Length: 492
Image (tube, rainbow, N blue to C red; front, side, top):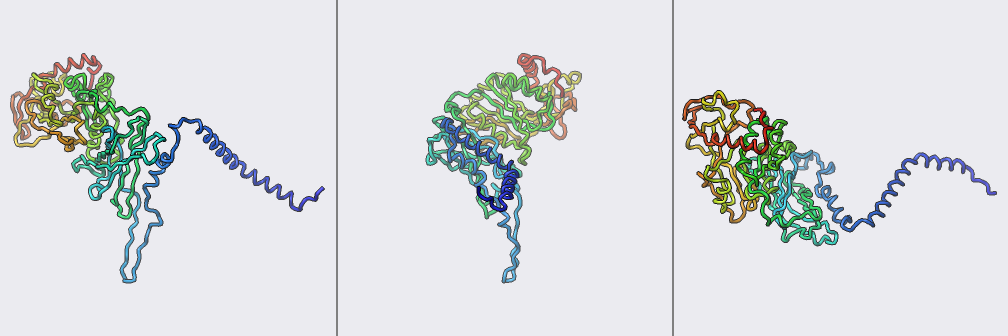
């Protein structure tokens, strides 16, 4: 029997103590190794279309790797030169605005995409940020050499009205169609500052702008007949809106636009519970879509980012409507009684854009004959005095054939396709009546009762105009036919 080495028992106790002290860590390590081995085993039985490729790993890490930030090691201190000159150092911290904020990305054809978003206005005003698009196919049989890339060009459609952020529409056009085999893929946007903000750094953010799952690309969308004849793209709705005015507006325009129409409403805080109750019947019938865009209030753009909203709406529904209209919910489109909206637009079909003349109406003056029953009458039924002051340039609203338009504005588009034409000569064929501010008043609009066919009020000449008043009865009957009496008790 061998003699035990001195101190052996002590060493054994030490080893056992170390093992006990790290038992929890060893269990965690062994569990992690077991899970990793299980995952590797399972991946052998997963179909090839789910295989993780090197490009996928590159995609995962690219947002981090592509955007290096100034580190503490770059920090310098003031330096007194031998010439006696004190060279000062500057120390940047944080970021004033995001490089790019996406709202939506949409196909414009087999080889084109439009990315709609916000970007730092000073960056675009005083620098030259650049964009590049890249398509990563999901099909793992296509290696990295088959990944196509495209130089992109940007459109700034907000006419310089942006604040901290400006609206940017990035157009990506590839040299050949992508995803024709419908195997899926991802569109990446590489957004570079080009030294803007800090000339020492050319930061590039890689943004996954759009992912097309396998089997979802519909090539016929670009050549088939649009789902709608007329689509309304609304600007951002905010504030305390009048449910009754919204009720009147939607009933009037669904009747005018007809069965093959749709209305896209953007809620920037204005669709409170009572307004929602007015919209619900029309949503249930399929005439109205409501989008909650309140999150955009985080980003300081012009007028609740309405340029962003209308451009997103344009590209989202570009191939779903023959004509898209842009106007507000205190404005009413009108065509003469012996025509229809369809016949008017057919006569203007050679134009990709038409602008519409404004008929400004008083938001205070009502005829005294309606005094006793004005509380039961609709807004456009009792506000019957039109401003006829001459020599004033009044805003126009517009409609477009969207397949010929790359970006749009609030009062018209300045980004039509090659050969596309605009006409402003629509007088006598189509116009809109504007009841400025009435949509935001939750009170009886009749402030002044007038017993005259013309009046000078607040230094403006007004004349009696019953054009829309004469349609009120037909609109009310239409609403009753479509949604019943559920909106009868709607409040101002």
